[in-house]
Amino acid sequence: MSDEKIEQQKPGFLKKAATFAESVISKGLNNNKSDVPEKQLRTFSCHGDNNTKLPPCSERMNSEKFPGSFYCGACGCGDKEMTLLNNRKLENGQDSYSKLDFPKVHCPLAMPGFTNYKPSESGVSENPRKIFIELTFGRDYVTENSK
Image (cartoon, rainbow, N blue to C red; front, side):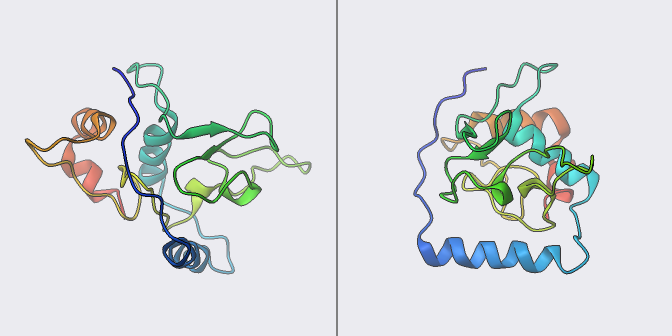
């Protein structure tokens, strides 16, 4: 499966601030996390999967600040610890809180698992990654686990 870049508009400052605030509020004071199926869909959407031969999203960037980690190049938030798409091991041995852990988090491509997920439309030029994930998991499962 090819992973061509999907053209999308970069979110403006106010949109980024609003979606960031929604994510932080959803985390709360108790470090609330997304449900396991939701995070699995987000992980599949961002990182792909070797078993199904789905490559990582073309917008997934290697972190320069945190080697071995990744961030989204499409959302405009940049390479920061809070925006990493994977959990890192902290000095105390625990996993860090990643962007994919937030109960509510948006994806610029509205991919499965994310709060702003929009199902693909039949007959409309669409993101082949989204269609592949919907076919792999089933659209009902994806819709149910994208909150």
